[in-house]
Length: 470
Ligand code: SAM
Ligand code: SF4
Image 1 (cartoon, rainbow, N blue to C red):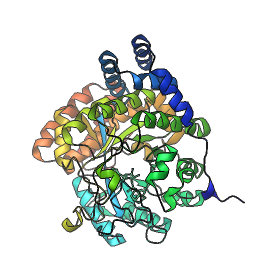
Image 2 (image 1 turned 120 degrees about the horizontal axis):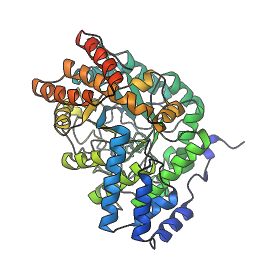
Image 3 (image 1 turned 30 degrees about the vertical axis):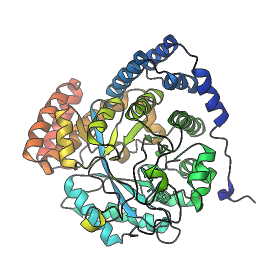
Image 4 (image 1 turned 180 degrees about the vertical axis):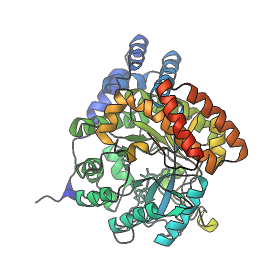
């Protein structure tokens, strides 16, 4: 019998078709491209052919139209909300040798650390005291030190930890591919999204980047989100690591992967992440990326994805530097991390937060307090909302509501409610002033019924009630 791990070419990504579509799109006219952008205003997404034409258009007029429409789509589907989370690196032990990652096995200078449950608790208390409610658990791949037993125990510990009356309300997980049985255990531990990046969808590049260890198996990895869905995890996150191969190919392949999941399970990925390669200790490819991704490329990546899959969340991490991150937010990013540490123990232990323990270096070092204040000034509503997950509005249920515009009606008040909690419990005086101002502005824009309902819940929060949502 063929073991699950021997799965090779799964047929999910049709490389020749992607190259062909990109080649054909070179001859598309400016008018054709503008027509596609016009069509995207109806939130119907893009086909692969249409996406290829937008990716290949260099005319400033077309690019401007893409950016403007992406801004409008983002505004309409996500309003001015920005959901915040904090990554929690629990272990940097790894048996793989990915050429771009500081955690690779051959990096002998890296201080390896697998957090104990007590240490995880300590880290979580710090994040809770900053106001975080959503955690992304991240781990290297090690069959003994951080296997499924360890990950499940870590998830349980995160949920069980509290500080005052606060606790983490949603734990998402980014760990190595698992078997269906193992995904079932992850699901039982009540995780939110299972996230896994394919790194590069280009098979040959993938093979070069992953010379040894279990990650060398392309097929085992690309089938992982499908296995997770089969195990009942209905929110999965995907994404390439930009810089390993041609970004246009990767964006096309990401849409192909999303379409595959949608076709097979009736729901596409819940989120797409857009990490760009960052420098990392003793990681040859990270220090010298094979494909330079410019800021303009990043803008096109976010904007075209926003048009291609309007209802899929786009996640940007702290990898990007502040002034540029703010620009990408406007084009379609709906979730972001703040004050991140990419080393196990990095929040509670200053020693751990050093290059010889980190996965890669971070471009935006602003902490959550600084970022929330800044975002309020720019007219955003920082959101810590976990209402959908807590009300079982996940997977297909979520998408159905999103596509009918219903989710927007609930997200806006829920974001306001979660932000109100943050303002009362964690914000400094200045943020409170800025925050209350924007809160009042957004409240005034709700429908009369929803405003009344939200005002009543806001009053409950003022009297001390927490975890309030619609
Ligand atoms: N070990 C698991 C895996 O490889 O899927 C999960 C954790 S891994 C630390 C999470 C992600 O970090 C990887 O999927 C990769 O995309 C990203 N990453 C690795 N090296 C990076 C670098 N130098 N710059 C930016 N992101 C990087
Ligand atoms: Fe290990 Fe993941 Fe880093 Fe690869 S990307 S070395 S699997 S932690």
